[in-house]
Length: 454
Ligand SMILES: *Cc1c(COP(=O)(O)O)cnc(C)c1O
Image 1 (tube, rainbow, N blue to C red):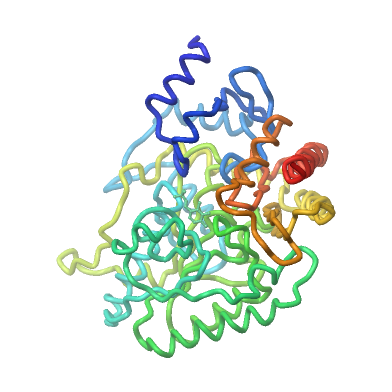
Image 2 (image 1 turned 45 degrees about the horizontal axis):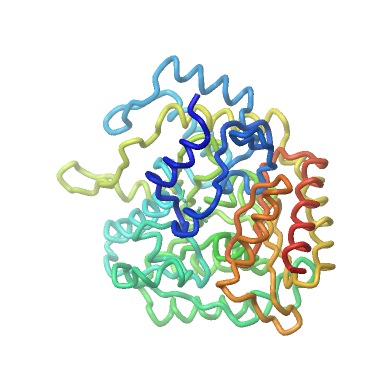
C-alpha cells in the first residue's frame, strides 16, 4: 500500500484540481478519500466525515451501496463499454425506456452523454438545429438568466450568468439574451418570507416577454434551472415562475429547455423539479444523480415533435451530428437503472418528506447566528449565506474566504462541505437518516459560530 506522504507529494506534484487556486492548495494538507460507507466518507487515515454535499451534488443512496455495487459488478462481467454509434446495448435501451416512463409526459426520446455540461450542449444544439429543420433558421438566440449555471463548456457557459466564472472567456461565448435579476431577488425567498416573491416573478416574466417581443421569431429557446439556481448561490425561484415561463414559451412558440442536472432525481422532494409546477419542457437535461453519483452519465430528453423534425433522407443531412464516445456506457446505464429501481422499491420520495421537513426546521435555527444573512432551501438542498453585517446586507469581503474557512472548521468536526463563495451549501445524499442529518446540522452550526466569532 502506498503511504500517505507519497500520495500527498504526488497530488501536489501531478494534479491540477478543478475550481481550485492551486497556490493555496499547495500549502494545505489535503484530505484523501479512500472509502465510503453510506453517507460517510473515510480518508486514508481512517477519519470519517459526513458527506454534506453528496460528493458534489451527485450521490443519492449513499456510498458503497450493496445493490448498486452488485448490479455494477454483474454488468462488468458482461461488458464495460460498447458504442451507441451505429450499435446498441441492453442497459442503454432499458434505461431509455425507464427515463421516458419517469419523466414528465411528452418527453419520449433520450439522447445520452456523460456530464451536465454536455447534456446542456446537446439541448442547445438540438434546439438550434430543430428550427433550421422547421424552416425558421433565424431562431438563433437563447434567453437565459443572471446567476444561472449550466456547466463549463463553451456553449453551456454562453447561457450561464455567473460573471466570475464566465467573464474571462467572454469573447469565446455566443451571444444570447441574459435576463437580469431584480435587486429584490436574493432576499426574496428566504426560508421565512417570500414577501418579494411575486414582484420578482413579475420582473422576470416581463423581461422575458420583452425579449421575446423585441426579438420576435429569433428566439430558439429559453434555458433555466427549475426552482433553484444551484451554483449561482442556491437561489430559489419565485413560486409559479416556471409554470408561467412555460406558458410564455408556448405562447411565443419557442422552446423551453430545463436544466435538471442538479434538481433531478429527488433533490427537490419530487423526482423532477418540473413536477412541482406541472411543466413538461421541450428539452430536459439530467446528469448528476442519474447514475446515483456512481459514474458519469447524462441524458437530454425531448419530445416526438423535436425528434421527428430530424427525420429525413440520409442525403438531406437532417441527422443530429453530435455524439460523445462514451455515450450510453453500459456500466453507467446499469447503475442508473438500479438507482431508479431503488427509488421505486423503497418508495424513497415519500420517505424523503419527513427528512426534508426536519432539514427545514433545523435550518431555521441558523438565523440565531449573528452572521447568517440568509437561509435558502429547496427540498434537500440549502444555502446558508454568511454576511459581515446582515442588517445592512454587507457581504464578507471575497479575500476573507469565509465560506472556505467554515468548511475547513467543519472538516475538523467531521463533515465534508464545499462553499459557493460566502454561501455554505448543504446537499447530503437523499438516503441520509434523521440522526445523521442532525449530526451534520450540528457540525455546520458550530462551525459557522466558531469561525464568524473569531
Ligand atoms: C453541475 C451542473 C451542471 C454541469 O454539470 P457537469 O457534470 O459538472 O458538467 C449543469 N447544470 C447544472 C444545473 C448543474 O448544477
